[in-house]
Image 1 (spheres, rainbow, N blue to C red):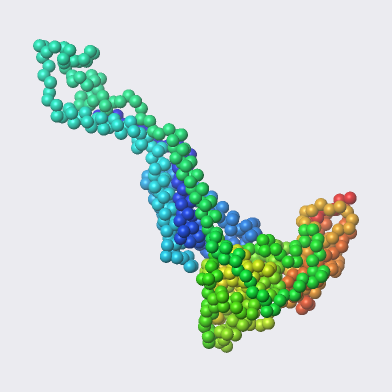
Image 2: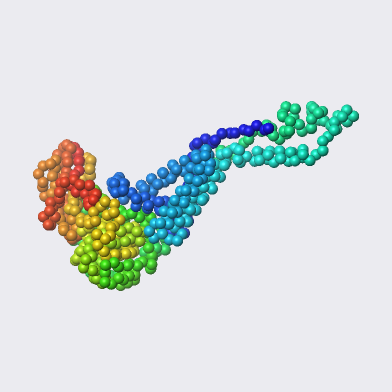
Length: 576
């Protein structure tokens, strides 16, 4: 019987490479398919969105505290790292315990398909990108690991087996040769052969075997160069496909439509920025935040892209008159301009998750007047096209504040990441209960009958803005030269307004700062304070007083459940 030889399992690092290359290829093709089906159905996007939904509030707060508006990038990077680690594990399993590596990748694909298919607004083919990715990844892993198996791929081993089978067939069919003394030696033997054995026999091996069973040439698997060539090609193809898919996720059609939108002239224009509203100090936040620097915090891992031609707003629930509104109908209404500062409830004391803009839109109170809410209704549940919901007190949408369905931001159509084509803007409330982007549904209801996205995760169902102030200059830890220094920042309490700001140095007496001219009570206001700095380390603090007479509280509270409180402070070092 022929001896069995085994080269042993491939080195673990090579199996890791096989797994990672296979998964990169799978992920890239999944992204490409998603571009055709729906960008939101990409495997990474679907899984990331699901993780955002199931993440506990502390995880969301930690992510925003650590990464700010880059929280989604951090999530995608985290998903990618976990995916690569699991890919390496799949490669190792396929080499040591086949077919479990292939099974693992297939399970990932099926899981991603189920998640994508059950996301809000999922289309009929939302499952397809993840399923394609799983299938491609499983096949690629199987092929790459086979390249590392010396018993599976070598062509010489296969050829020798075929030769052995042919020899066995010949031996069974050929008649026996009689060997006697009269036969010429040259006709019955070859030099060095035994006269009692067939010509192809070997006296040093067991009977019934042939030299084909004992080929002295070693089994040779494909070279590592071949393996790395295929693995590198798979990984490169996957990375290229991912890049193309991510770029393709931005719809050229919707971008072109947005550029072509001509905003209507407002029936009511916003007041001009008053003289003295902008202190123009280096490091101080602009009184009007440019669109490209306006903070973005939402739950959309992939920015929804809505063609205005397809947009509809449904107004329904506890109303006498349900109706739908189209984009053309909205633009035909008498839209109004107004200034409003928006703030995220996750904004820490002194944080930057806040911005001020000039918005253009139609008053929501007029839409609700048309719908005629019932007397017992007290809340409007707004819904985004991606499934996000916010619970806004009905009175905040029906009083005289500038609560609008916004279509414009600082003179241009809403940027896609800020809600194009339509979003809500409500002064005096944190964004999580009012500033729904890509809004498509307003349901008039009650707080005791319905809950919103963040209220189901431990946040307050109502989120009025709290009185806050912030030091922008000097920066924390900044080294200053002794002498005259300007301390400056911003303060806000929308719908109330700021009456004054005070500053103190090293827990001394509170001293009044000078307020700039506020645009309105719905916007933040800049302030400044002249300080004669002396050498040494100093702590600078600020606090605001509202027009209602409230003094900013020193009590420190976290952002959960309804916004942070406390005084903002900075430490600086002053040198001669």
